[in-house]
Length: 490
Image 1 (cartoon, rainbow, N blue to C red):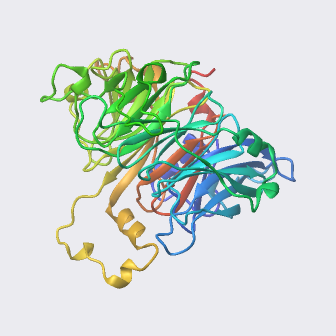
Image 2 (cartoon, rainbow, N blue to C red):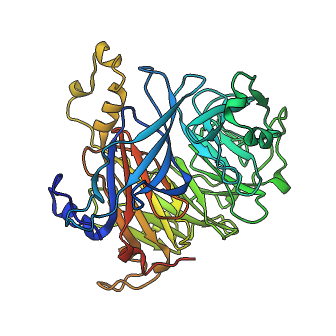
């Protein structure tokens, strides 16, 4: 348990209770907003033998105001002083030691993810139809691989869990691509300095699938998320798109269109919540809203979580694609409490008053604690009475932060909820209803200006959470040990 430092005293009752909820809570103002964040593996000790040192992978989104970069940031977390009653576990990071690497082409880094099997390899996607893979070694990095063949850029990216150096991407024109970095093992073994000046190795996609074309046709819709199953076979993956569907693909069945094929293979199954207008066929079900994120449960071959418009996280058993197992809904600022409903489709959930524009943008399973799920939702502010405040001058458009400032002003806020799924179905202590809001272990709201969450990451050991948002803010926090004590761990 931590306490507030002498500076930055809490201003609300909620903030005053934070020392009961967090062992660590730190914030840092980034020079440029980052659309991506990921923890690099490893924990080190500082020179004093007590400071905890970790590394974060960030990117820049300068809107053309400056060159774009990858950033490897060194985070130092100091423990409470043994001679002082004022620990530094809650407050602001005094500074971040960073190493920056130019991103080529010079476009904003949409997503950057490290390879689980080879942490030195980092893949990044942007608005350009090119995937770049860098090899990081300490403060040095070199572009080792260049993956081409896409017809558009995008945000979706995920490395294969056990397929060594393979990864998936999803693009804004509704396509999913599989790349296998033949020869990347040799590149990863070489020092980055030995690779400087040599031509980039280029790769074409091994297979391609059409998210929109599989299972019903229709216009192409952007693929917002892709994810490999954590099953030992690692032959199953899923994609979520603007059409509101989550398509589950099996490499052993769907095949794929190949690098030059049409990508007309159909998904093994389609997951989406039924609506009043949906048909009885699971392959043609449709739902309103957009699919924004997904995550496979570790150690569970068929359990998948997805999120999108409607501020709800859906839990799925891929063997029962007609309806989700449960719906976990964020409450925003206009409802009294979150709800968790099991055994029903979202259309039949208990009464709930969503905030305008509620959207779950990120969902993750907590490493080492299979019953914990963490999701981030953002809520749009009500439309202003007049349009004068939304207008901007040509001079404002030239400001590098103008677009992000307007996006932050339009956001009513965001929240990150840690759910304990082991509590699903337990009776409510205050009522007789099943699946109460007690499934919420922690509801985190940022301290400071309201903004939309851009990305979120949980460290591999489950010790720290990192969140970046459109207000150029980086938050790093660790739930109190007392909170996690009663949860299911490995």
